[in-house]
Image (cartoon, rainbow, N blue to C red; front, side, top):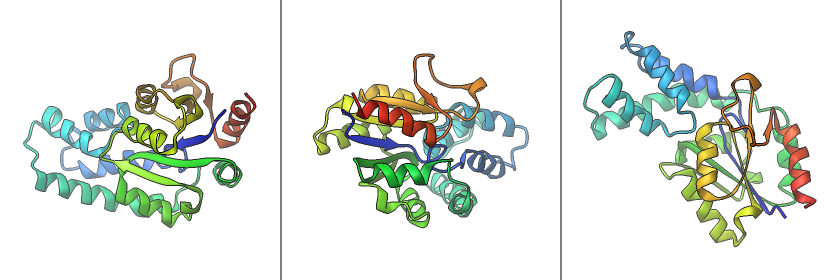
Length: 215
């Protein structure tokens, strides 16, 4: 029986993926020759931390050195581009109803590739902290955090569900050995294998979760 649910943040709780894509475009606007390649890399690696993306961009696309000082500057500028918009962007349909319902029934967690300090700030600003037992972000890997949660909460891997919207989320869930459901906006571009259960919003997720609870 399902005992805890882990939710990704961007694309599962808030509809913020386009905000982050536009932030990459603005952040690297001084490199017009490479912007398309940078955006393509970002889209192919949704669910991967911005730090890993910055490293790849500088090493393999811009072919420039990236030291710790420059990385910190990029992180600060990126955060400035996204935080205010994510504070006010729409929720994924059904989120608040889902959280109100299931926070009373089981333990809920957030795992995201967003830097942890920034993530916790955003969760607080959106008034969501009351629903979650824990909120975790980068630089830790999602699979590592999931395994830590399972151990601390003393539940079996098949008693934990991870809900994500990217191929990386699916990979990390597989590494941790937990159940997975994918959230998909456009069914024509679903990033998951055919055997993965998918939902378009959290209203549909509620239906699947009820099925898991009745097992």
